Image 1 (cartoon, rainbow, N blue to C red):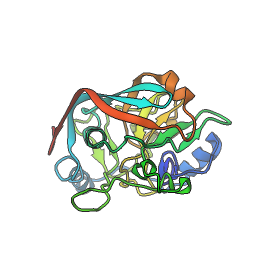
Image 2 (tube, rainbow, N blue to C red):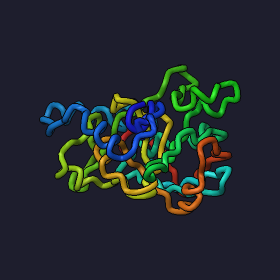
Image 3 (tube, helix red, strand yellow):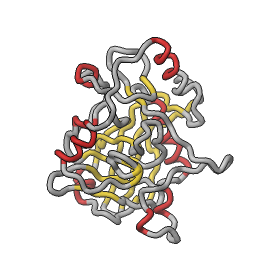
Amino acid sequence: MSLPLHPFSPPCRRRWPDLVRPLLLAALLSLAPFGLVACAADQKQAAMGCGSSSAPCLSGTAVVSLETSKGEVQLSLDGGAAPLTAGNFVDLVKRGTYNGTVFHRVVRDPVPFVVQGGDPASADPKVPVSQYGTGDFLDPVTGESRQIPLELKLSKEPLPRYGQPLSSPVLNRDLALTHQRGAVAMARSNNPNSASAQFYVALEALPELDGRYAVFGRVTKGMEVIDRIQQGDRIVKAKVIEGGTLVKGQP
């Protein structure tokens, strides 16, 4: 994926090359700029949200426990600011999708960046390590990849925006969820609407990713565990321990 996923690109869903922050920022800035969207575009974005997605949305909040090979991590998910992104994640947790998956990308040098995992393919012992970071969640009913649109919530707007990155520093300053240390966000490819299952945790504040990748929660317990995770460590089991009410349509 691109920044972050498909390679990380960090957040890509595929693996990013090990970029240092200046190179990462340059790559991000090389993306085509997006301006303010007109009314028709706003309506189109709204149609990409909870009302039309195959993934459920999160009503309220949820706390997810990740039992990793290095210890327990707890994530607090925000269904108010990121109902679709958080709902997709909770749904995958409840399905057992993350159990046994590998943290396939850990970038700490020369500066702390991200810990990335969640590729469903990495739980399959038959999949070679070289392919970790290229997988999506495949819907067992349709056999197709479930992908969700980029979801960004501005504090002054009642509903999230969908489908388009933000390039305006003014708008980015009004984001309800930002890339602070411990932020949990979705990895994706260059296509902003290609997030599926892979996610990453920011090891420090990464404002250059704000408006481009969907933050949907944060680490509330066990950040010291995240700091110990190495490439190849696993999520032994993920489970919802609080909240986690899923709905179809707008919560």
